[in-house]
Amino acid sequence: MVPVILVRYGELGLKGLNRPDFEKALSENIKRALQGLEYRYIHRDRGRIFIENYSMGEEGEFLSRLSRVFGIVSFSPAMAAELELDQVEQVSLEVFRRAMTVVAEGKSVTFKVHATRANKAFPLDSMELNRHLGAHVLKNIPGLSVDVHNPDITLAVEIRDRAYVSCRTLPGPGGLPYGVSGRALLLLSGGIDSPVAGWLAMKRGVEIQAVHFYSFPFTGEKSKTKVIDICKALARWSGAIQLYVVPFAEIQTSIMEHCHEEMRIVVMRRMMFRIAQELAGRHGALALVTGESVGQVASQTLESMRAVNAVTNLPVLRPLAGADKTEIVRLAKEIGTFEISIRPYEDCCTLFAPKHPRTRPQPAEAEAEEAKLDIVGLVRTAVEATEILSVRR
Ligand code: ATP
Ligand code: MG
Image 1 (tube, rainbow, N blue to C red):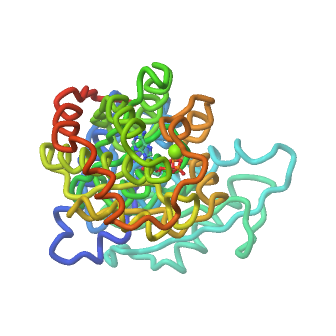
Image 2 (tube, protein in one colour; image 1 turned 30 degrees about the vertical axis):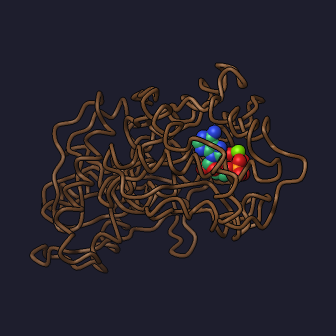
């Protein structure tokens, strides 16, 4: 009898030729997520990944880390037994007794057995196993009754190369293994939205690096710490995240001095995109990601997006385009970035926001304003002075 965590993945199966690569990536990502925890080894077999002989004393940590590995649909801490009926019976009782300790004491407990037989060499089929193991549990553990519709405990038994017995199936985050979709650069402010946007891109297999435009000394050092902390929270889902901190105050000052007030935001955002595009090129990112949501604020109208988008030829992913603020907040709480994002430090946009920004700026108007700036020089200086950090969870 060996403790094994059984990992299920879904969508990967649909990806045809990519499938072996995706499975390999998922195994590697699981290994990375479990670093520092004890287990024998990880192996794959017909649409499942198995974490062999894991240390049950650390079970909580195993489960919590696996719940943050993209590509996993669900997973079960299980016991594996040899394919002998008496062994399967024994393991079933063992697993069942452990599950009982979790159910409220004194309560009468209902259960069912759910057997599946992928290995047809096993003499009992799934119906026979259900009946046989159900009777075995009833006989050995007093005070139980069977309820096939709404049981307190479901004893799942999978007959494969061995029998895998478990009473718990936990949800994974779904999506695709981190990294299989290539790399993108996330424009990461200290706000609520952009970390969620980054997380949604990660969920689709996109490896994220982050760029933050840092308005020091207009904003304090704490705004940088905040962004680093957001990266730490995101890194729990991915492993280390490369963070580029771009000094942005000089550019903002230049915009304040030379550009018409109502065009400031558009010009500023175009500068962000230019610098992001340059960094993306240097660091192998294929796309930009932002936390924009259509219509949320004046700078997120379609006209503004078009005017800003005009300075880059990279695809710009906006995973939150169609999300409401309440949905975004709910996700931010789930992924663990909300509490950091609401820390009260100003971001550069709130400092520089004009009273009446243009809600429908034209690209040509932005160009006219930018003619007053040394765009190339400003971009170059900012990129050269960019600080590169590697942030771990
Ligand atoms: P967020 O909650 O992500 O800050 P927001 O609703 O405040 O978004 P804006 O301030 O208009 O929206 O910013 C839109 C997007 O531009 C952000 O989601 C982020 O991707 C990017 N962005 C804004 N400010 C910065 C910054 N200082 N550094 C990096 N990216 C930024
Ligand atoms: Mg913001």
